[in-house]
Length: 478
Image (cartoon, rainbow, N blue to C red; front, side, top):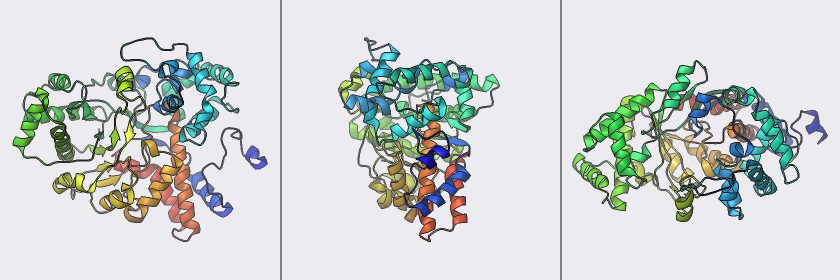
């Protein structure tokens, strides 16, 4: 503790050697590697922060609205321990009453903060509390009001507006994620404002690709209106995608993002694709047919990426909205998306037969099924020129998950078939914390390769820089 106190103010909430190896020699190498990359700019190529924040640059409302109400990492844990979402201010779909007193919400969160011990959420939150708000005591029922008052006081200052924090976090570029139905007004406003922060969009077409998506037929009607294309037939529908992709590119997009339930792809003939599309429009498509249509659209999106250069991200394997009761009352993204087993080798083959050896295409694969890393994903990415592996994602963007990712993929795919780190978050203040965790875990992993004679130290420094900065910029064409 004396050494820790001597090395700076992170002595209470944050151990300066957190996530580094316990062995003193290996820890020393990890420290040296980390010292050279800790202050590199943050490149955040995939996330869910609200572009309106940067466009309007208004103060965040209060501590509860910043840290609790919008963050499913936080409220899913509390709900699992018996705290009602209504008590946490999570809005309902029908507008029925929920708690609106932010201090009460914060106190409820604080008295249950012990539930996050040992979790990545605890690391991220403590990092934010310490580095942003200069707090050096643990959050609890006793310290709840102290925390609330300190954070609220800071949020009222100009230095805590979204653009100021963006610059303080040393963010070089951040990508938000929007539906093809979004008019991207906030991105346009950012561009017109003269602010130099780089905030770009990404094309997420699920709402008009998945026949099971809520309001699919109405979404297609809007899709046709805003694209100016005839979406009554499949050819016009594809043209509408091309038109919207061009619009997204005009506002900085370099990638698409596809959140399908499975990794299934198909390469259907045009007649079959038309038949399934018409059934989707009528609303009489079966679950199997809908899955086939989604799979075919992944292949169509890959073809479009060959034409327009957008990087393709595939995020399969989540059973969305597992609790029908919670979905009915609160809607999507309320902590009830659950990982499932996912096949990649068979599922991706139809698409890879079409585009898999195209070096001009970049397809980034993510997984919520860690058993697929060494068996399927690393071998696929290690040989197909178009494939790269996305980082440990969602339920596995923890120190342990990141470590397992490196252990299970490096032997077959190496480092250079991966794409660095992305934070994939709506929680703005957690972004530097998440990137810091990734940097520390990678440095710890590289340090062990050095001390066991598998990597020279000069090579480890180069790899650490690549994993932190170069690979993500190249993979996402930033």
